[in-house]
Length: 116
Ligand code: HEC
Image (cartoon, rainbow, N blue to C red; front, side):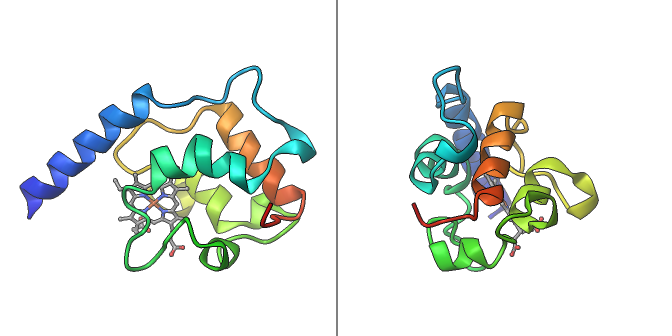
């Protein structure tokens, strides 16, 4: 089991390094949509572990339960990618998200965390 988890983690790590970083052309502010976050961050960097038993990041209701719409700093989702005070910084076992990626998540939350 341990070997399996390690192999899985390494595989998802290698995969995410090649995958999209938020770049200059990425949306910012109120133009950040959940569709964008899913394609740029959640699916390539989180979904390998999160459709898990406790948190399926592709499910809007489960995502919403970890967000305080309008306040990134009060949101579990944002705290877990930025601040070790709230637990292992996500994505677990991989490099932290870029500042642009963290900002995109914050922007989406601060704009109401809509299912858009
Ligand atoms: C290698 C596996 C792995 C990856 C990749 C990963 N996580 Fe996690 N995540 C976990 C585990 C295991 C837990 C539960 C233990 C804990 O809370 O530290 C967790 C917990 C969480 C929680 C708290 C869960 C709750 O019920 O409130 C959030 C939020 C979270 N992860 C977000 C993310 C985000 C966002 C990403 C992508 C940027 C990500 N995770 C990537 C393994 C992972």
